[in-house]
Image (cartoon, rainbow, N blue to C red; front, top):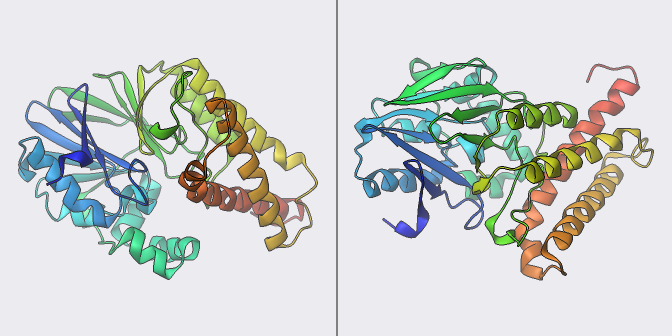
Amino acid sequence: MNPTHFQDLSYDLTLIDTGYHRPGCTGSYLMESMGRAAFIETGHANAVPRLMDALEYRGLSPNTVDYVIVTHVHLDHAGGAGALLEKLPNALLVVHPAGAQHMVDPSRLIAGTRVVYGDDQFQKNFGSVVAVDPSRVIAVPDGYLLTLGDRQLTILDTPGHARHHICIWDAYSRGLFTGDAFGLSYRAFDGLEGPYIFPATTPIQFDPMTAIQTVDRLSALNPTQLFLTHFGMINWNTVVRDAMITQLKMIQSWRERTEWRGQTGPQRRRWIEAQVKQWIVEGLRTHMHGALTAQDRTLLNMDMELNAQGIDCWLAALEKQTAGYSA
């Protein structure tokens, strides 16, 4: 056990660094109430030993875990669900109805992720994905209530990043577990004005207008804090909300631009990548009041590449619609 992987938060929560890509990139949360426990997000399959160590760290047995909740089925969030459930005899998997099938039969999910990352990176980043027994799956609709000890969790249907995305409202902490619906914010970039946050536009279902509606819905709850998968707890305020809305509207405005229309796939991708890098790097430079180091840029490279791919998928779908095809 390495306790440096864990961070004790308020409200009987433990943040577990899943070790995906680099330290401080992706987290899972262990929630406790009256001797019962739940994991929110599992990370990739290789993270399961860390999650089990977290139970031991908190003095809990595997039998105490009632739920494994995943915000969506992208493998950096849910790839370890099947392997983790094999070690938790009483736990049920909580997932969006549109994502449940991919947990029971992950073959299409694996194939799609291999296309995005390539075979070598897939094995390195995600390991072996284990199918989940369908009898252990709860496909949760919007507004579904879960009880953990004396804690009540409300499931919210939150599309935009993906159509199969949920967020979890925890009344006890007045906190939201946001998955990728409220963007990415890394603690290495916290400044005097607070956190730097930007949208997660990963392939293949990203839609900026729907994402804006989701941010508005989540903000209307007036949470005290956000528990981000990427990464950690941040205080919620209107500055954070406005930063997300402004950037999503900027992306939405690209549908009216002409530079990308009629370009071939590689040409469009290069244009999008340049736009994404300028947007994120310039925003962070302003936030940090200075130039970025080479290390700063390295920390952002993966997200900038994935964001560009997701926006490319969205623009390609718009192009098909314009040409009269079904996207």
